[in-house]
Image 1 (tube, rainbow, N blue to C red):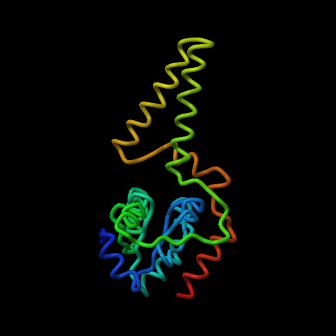
Image 2 (cartoon, helix red, strand yellow):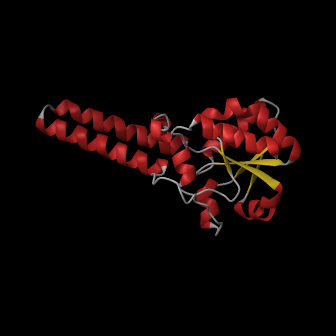
Image 3 (cartoon, rainbow, N blue to C red):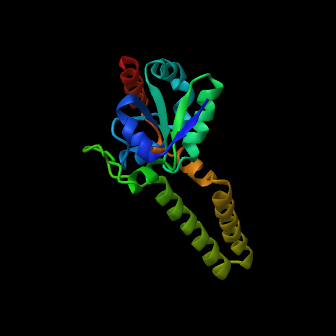
Length: 188
């Protein structure tokens, strides 16, 4: 059974939780809960055996930016018989409630996924409008398609553009880094 913890409850229980952050490495480096381990959602299947062991020692708390990806991760864990809780509202709610976010000192500067999506979507809309004015009016349909995708994203709380951007090299997990995270979880 998967549960949801509010930021206040999670803060009170943080010392007894194993926190798994399922955002991209760039998002994680931008600020994460104290003690969180970064296992991006795309790498979750590879980590299942280790997460099963970790869940036997301490309750798992799965977090992301808003709670949508962590709910997806909890569904994957649940299908594999691994109990986990998700952080209501994600790291955004945690920070808004006054929770501390850790940022690695040596982390390269990265943009949060929502900022990457805004830049990409805005650029594509602008491109469609400019091509519509300069080349052919039909290019404006491209901008309309991007706008429709953003509306769908808001209504469904999913984002295909973020999923695609998450696959770019600078948003991907280094295999050695993931191996290090898994080794750290195995040690407890």
